[in-house]
Structure formats: structure tokens, C-alpha cells
Image 1 (cartoon, one colour):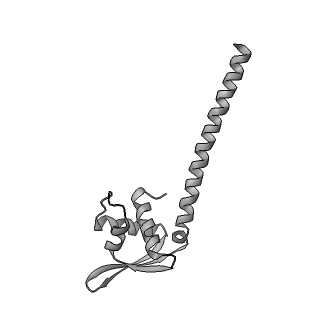
Image 2 (cartoon, helix red, strand yellow):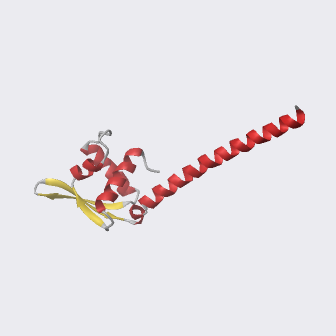
Image 3 (cartoon, helix red, strand yellow):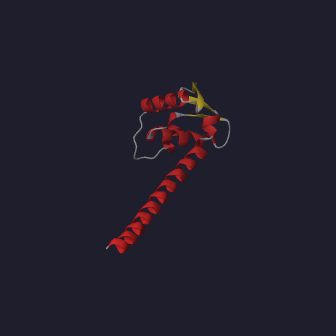
Amino acid sequence: MLSKYENQVMSAVYSLCDGTDGCLVSPLDILSVLPAKHKITLEKLDDILNALKCDGYFDLIFSERKGEKMYVINLKESGFAFKRTAKQKQRDITFKIFLAFVGAFATFIFGIILKGIFG
């Protein structure tokens, strides 16, 4: 399970790769896609990218272009399935909430029936 920051960075990497197997991006490209309210430093970004690499989402190679640090990212199976997995988690949460409401409603009706019988 990814943390909030890992989820945001993985979403940014996925969108920057734009449906291709890989991409060449700078840290500033990734930080520009992330929400502004979460201040992620370059060091923290490196740590998050390494964690995602270890989790098997993508291959990561550090490079330089004209003196600027660059990342060469090649998505793996887990990386390609990231959006689908996120949608599935959202469906599961929605289903659990719906199930809780149905259970609460059934309990309410059962209570009214019992109150009518014994009350």
C-alpha cells in the first residue's frame, strides 16, 4: 500500500509517461505536476522515487542533461496497472460504504419490527 506522497508521485510519473513505456523527466517536471499544498523537497522526491523503484513500479536511472539532474523512468507491470488499481480501490471503498448503509437500514427496520411485536 502506497503512502499519500508515494501515491501522488506515482500518479505524476504515470501522467508524465503519458501511456508510453518510459520517459525522461527532470525533478522539476515531477514537482510541477504535484499539488502545491504538499511541499516535497528534491531529497524527499529522490527517496520516494527509490521506494517506488524498490516496490517494482518502474526502473529508475539517474542521468544528467546539460548539468541538470534527470530521471530515466521505464514503467513495469505494476506501474502500468497503477491507475486501474487506484480505480479498483475507489470502487471497493464505495461498495463498503454502500454495504454499511444497507446494514444500518436493515438494522433500523428490524428494530421497528421487533418494537411492533414486543412493544
